[in-house]
Length: 219
Image (cartoon, rainbow, N blue to C red; front, side, top):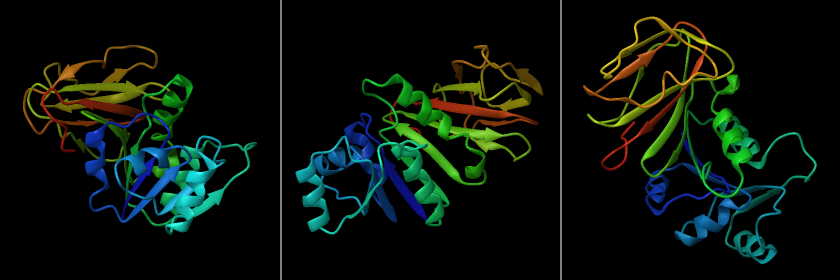
């Protein structure tokens, strides 16, 4: 089951292609505005709804969108609530749009860190904007195949601590059971030399950010 979650950042027009074939589309608060602009109504609108016009909420409800209002004082962001709802609905694939862009750097960082939530281990969860896709790979959980073509960029950034035993295949600057230290930039801006490239690690969590030089990554 593929679920698309749309947050309140700034998706680009080409992101609308991810809506094709989605089994469920969830708007996290202001993400509903972008969905309306691209001609798609969410199946579910949730959040504290402080970033969407009340008339838009009424219009969506009339058109069949389920509305789930949460209090403003809560312990999770609207995006986190939407991802958790997708997981509980049985999603095995979650695509997060609108995680990036906008005026709130804190929200961008928080959205990327959501990808490393342990409860999402085993699911295909990615944040995407245009030619960029971000995912995570966890130690001991096999090899992550990358979707980039030759020449595309790949950054490997540790989350929550050092990532140990990192090995890559098909990248210009290979790693062979090496450690990427938290707070260091060694894993930044590698390049795909042979596709499909891949990455694995023995322990820790890596945020894997792929940037297509020509078009959109296929991962």
